[in-house]
Amino acid sequence: MSGQVAVKTELSSAGPPGGGPLDRWFRISERGSTFPREIRGGFATFFTMAYILVLNPIILGSAKDKFGHALSTPQLLTATALVAAVMTVIMGVGGNLPLAIAAGLGLNAVVAFQIAPLMSWADAMGLVVLEGLVICVLVVSGLREAVMHAIPQALKQAISVGIGLFIAFIGFVDAGFVSRIPDASNTTVPVQLGGSGALSGWPVLVFCLGVLLTVALMARKVKGAILISIVAMTVLAIVINSVANIKSWGLTTPKVPTDIFSAPDFGLLGHFSIFGAFGQVSAITVVLLVFTLILSDFFDTMGTVVGITAEAGLLDKDGKVPNLGRVLLIDGAAAVAGGAASSSSNTAFIESAAGVGEGARTGFANVVTGALFAVALFLSPLLTIVPLQAAAPALVAVGFLMITQVKNINWDSYEIAIPAFLTIAVMPFTYSITNGIGAGFIAYVVLKTVLGKAREVHWLLWATSALFVVYFAIDPIEQALGVK
Image (cartoon, rainbow, N blue to C red; front, side, top):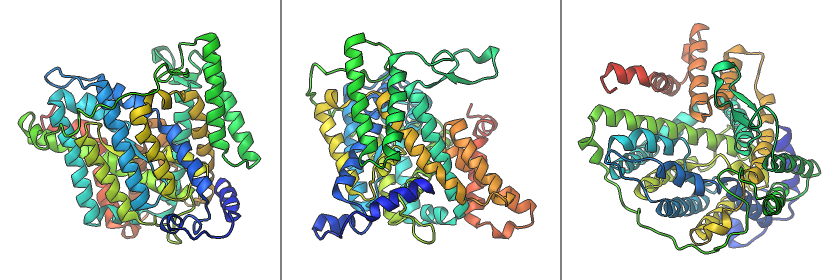
């Protein structure tokens, strides 16, 4: 892939291997990286995912549980930053991959709007803890790792490509360059350019300039291209906002904060009941809710780990992820920690691709990202001034780097090309990594079967595809079981 080759060429000239204990532990020189690259990568990852400090409290705080109780926004911000800081550092030190961790989008919406209305918040977060424990058991048993190894290499490449399109689409949507049509009843077009069919407003201009600056710096192979763009566009956004006082920046308004420090509130830590849900809803409902959480978390993480590791050029000759068992166990523990802290299930973030695009190749970048989340516990007003319009260009640029892997797929063989296509297309079109993986798995099994090659399909892919059939048909299944 051209993007990856360019990065590898740059890294190969990093200089002679270092000999310090940190260098040896994180294998920084061995992987062709340097401390400055890892630090830049850690900063880039943080700034592209810092929005979670604002968005997670908004999603969880906007919902009420069965008894009409809402969670405190300041407490949610503290819980979100704390778990992200601790688990990101643990992933860096233990897994040694540049994979940052924070509250998973989509998963938090399920907890807020599907689970919490059926029970108390403590019971809902208990189910998140239970989900994480089950995932840890799957990891310890070797099943989760075995599933990842059973995936054909072409499908792994398709997952990376699909994620590339997905995160680029996220960047366009978050920046307001693309938007949903509010009332699509009179048109067959679901999305549009800008907010009204045309680009307008200073925020979108900041995004467009950010994209152009990022790709120009990347084309000229400027070190720190992504981070330079984020900082430059944030400064520009602050200047524009101070002059025009714009109201349409979205979640984060780029202005110099009146307060720099904010005291963290740890009041939500430990407020969960792991078995409380069984007293509120039927056992079948509990099983289905936990199943939904597990499947989304399981395969979102799988896609993210494969995609980021492949883009970083860290897959071995057999296409396997280094330290995979530890990486998956830490990710499962992150789900447990998220539930225990009431910040919802935490998982590997696809925005880690921004750090990889900046040159990160080891877990030391995670230490930097985690440290910034820890600082955010006390300096959240200062560290949340980066608007999405300034950070989103990084997602578009990294999306380009990841999509270049598409050339490695054999498009002449329909039995793998069609599943690969569905994997790539379904991810951005349904806004879900899990949905794309499920569509690709099912298509792969079906095509192998109709071509008389069913024996070539690993039994774990058969089992996983069957679970995805249940996942996609969850609504009629719930109706048949009387859950709805």
